[in-house]
Length: 496
Image (cartoon, rainbow, N blue to C red; front, side, top):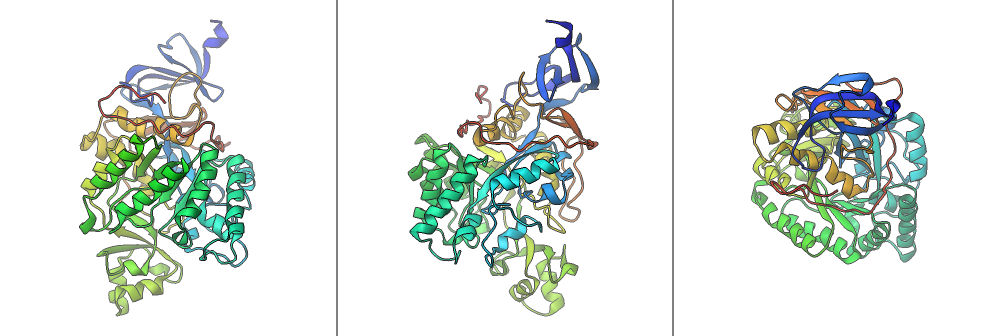
């Protein structure tokens, strides 16, 4: 090896390397040059412009957030410090059926678009990619196509059943987006207008995605009393179309349904046994968050307002407090607050643990950065896994948890040379202290940064704790078909 071959831009020394494949950690060094990992092991005789001592720290692949709503934040708030501060180096946007493209026909709108931000939407995946690349993203971004956007872009009445011509138009739009870099499509079957979709519509779109080797992610139709049927619905779409399927932020809402994940997870296992590429993700909290839905006011005891357009003075208040102040019932108060967002406390922490422990479960923050008082998952999901879930609760070995947040999502979304620390991979890297890393964001103070994350690199450029002058992120395209390898606890290292 020539002397120049032993020179790197960054050398991370003496750390515990967890490479993302669930293999046991190894003590060693990591060398980074020109944005990629070029060597691992004993690099004591290698020269480097920047040397970082990682003694007693873990060096791992940067985390991949499988479920973000940061689509327009790359334009509105490009620092993305809620991502970098918890070790996230890539995010998948366009979830729950809403995305930054394609833009709706004039007059068409969906309440769920409020999840994204205030900037205008884009006409196509190509236009969105060009805008993000021009602004230079802080982290990497992969985009799904929102099913609601497809409906609103081609249907005069998005709440109707699509005509044959409209169905074909949606399929053409999806095909174009997937051909130009989108990694899949998402549905929000609990929201308008996605709730109007019937199996034939979804199967037609999923067949287009399957042709591209991509996937269908779904906020299922109901996460409460009919959660089992709702999971089976999206599995059936995948089964009939041969499309890889991801159940988004899987949960069982309301006490009467706690424990039913035993059945939903068994159904996912059966689908996988049949040959389906079926996966799921969670965020590690017992409260959910989305737009304020007045019909939930009398079924969920605790609802916290995260934002309200007509009544911003109510941000952060409990809905019951607002109703008491206004002298009305909670549903009436909720309607007066619209448009608005809320946190719903209706999940069981033990069940969240069970779901996360499934070998095909990944982590998606589902963070809502446009909210005035956001859910703490925006700032703390990944460090909450590392601290309370792994170190404190002992749900699984740290190596397995890291694999669920790195190599597994890279395999599901077809992201080449991501999610692993190996020679030739892109240098998306996080360094953290396994003894102290934890989330700090709370329900009352939801934007507190995590502790224990020492440094984060995106494509070889350090983005945390100090942001660079030139942002190093990339728009990621699908490079291979969904593989969805499981991460078994205590098993042999999976091949990604």
